[in-house]
Image 1 (cartoon, rainbow, N blue to C red):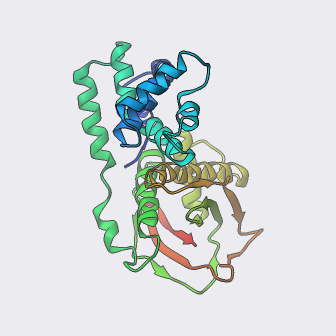
Image 2 (spheres, helix red, strand yellow):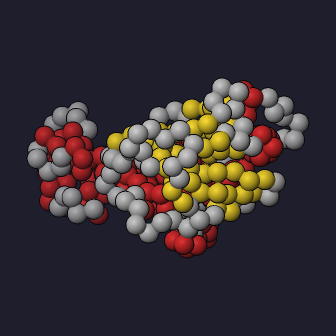
Length: 287
């Protein structure tokens, strides 16, 4: 499931250069008008005949495909956003661009897609650690799945998550709590609660240097970015289910400033005890 974006996967594995990826993305964007129509048909939101009508109208105006499709009554705002999200996240179109620009062969693309799709598979064991009766099971599954894969890929740490449980108690801050609010439908707060040793290790792994000074500011920035990437990737999946959701910038709480995280009235706290090779941490959900 992660990384969600095929381009990120190709770049991190050095299958394409940053320059080639950027060129392919520009090439892909230059074809957006046609491709949005293709996606709308693929998602059964428009018929091929309706797409042709929009294209004919485009020849007489400088409006974008999506604007015209809405004004002509073929799409509404929500359907257009769904189409755009699918288009941005769908790796097939990027693969086509890379082939047409001669940056990859068809054989290479097939190999990399197979590898990418294998990484995308959800982690089956998560089914046993998330309470079955939870309202937001799918969203929390995605967040946990993404957390494990981003920890492995970006922080080079094997994140093992234990069985989640509801808690009415305050969460003791181990050193740093990095929290991101997902707003819209649904409303969720995702947080990592890390001891200093684990936070420092993640920071140095992200920088790929053991010489990085693990001061509070550097750690907060690094863990905030890790949380940001986890939630950003998770949101891209949640959006595909038709949910309208976005996220706020990460908030960092050091022990010296906030010793405990307290659920507000009416909030549920779902806590997942977790560990990596060098220590223990918490992954938490407030909703």
